[in-house]
Amino acid sequence: MIEVEYNIILVIVSYAIAVFGSYVGLNLAIRVPAAKPGKDLYFWVALSAIAIGGAIWSMHYIGMMAVDMKMPVSYDIGLTIVSMLLAVLFVAAGIVIVGRGTPSMVKLLGGGVIAGLGVAAMHYTGMASMEMEATMSYNTTLLIASIVIAIVAATAALWLAFNLRGGLQRFGSAFIMGIAVCGMHYTGMAAMEMTHTGDMMAMASNTDSNAINSSIIIFFGSVITLSLLWVVAIQSVPQKTNLVFGE
Image 1 (cartoon, rainbow, N blue to C red):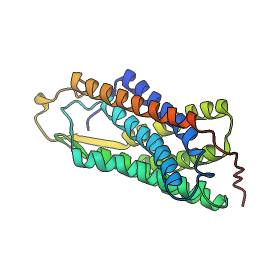
Image 2: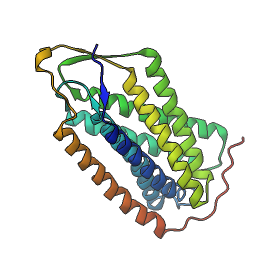
Image 3: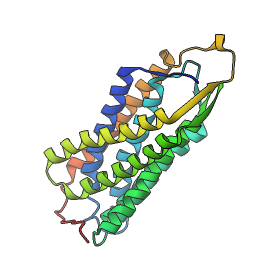
Image 4: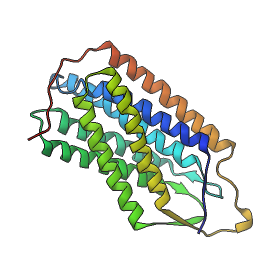
């Protein structure tokens, strides 16, 4: 079995993206309950899902590149795109379920499960996109733990999105969400068990300049996108809503 190592700088960068995306997403999702049906609703759901789901996806791939798997690694572009779409679409579904209509605990849990499973599906689809000279299997206990963390994190995120009105509250919550998202990702990474199938002498680090350059591109691409979404968020002041999940 291959023992992996982490580039701590890229781990920190992955957390920073998770926090920033969570904060922007919270400020966008808060517009959903009062949005008018039709284009206005679609607009805010799409932006908040792109912020949260896109940031989770970016965090995931930077986190993957932070791992030195002791061999060259490339990624299947098709599965990479699918993994991103899964995160955005499932998060969007969760936002609509929880943010529209009469609030209830059943809707919160249902939306959290759907969004969480989408995040988990994104993670393991992303893992499947790796192309390398190794077979991959998973520790069942850690795999299940990562899915549970994803569901709990998604449920908490949806509750926070529609119940916090203070900017300082949302800012602090973003750091907590970042920890939850990274917790799911790195638990999923810990569940991975790899066995090398190629020439051991040919193994090389995958945390070389190419991985770092790719991480930089993803990081700045995410920052630019999230910054633009943040500008949109602060230009629109949401109407106050009182969502109480106690039914």
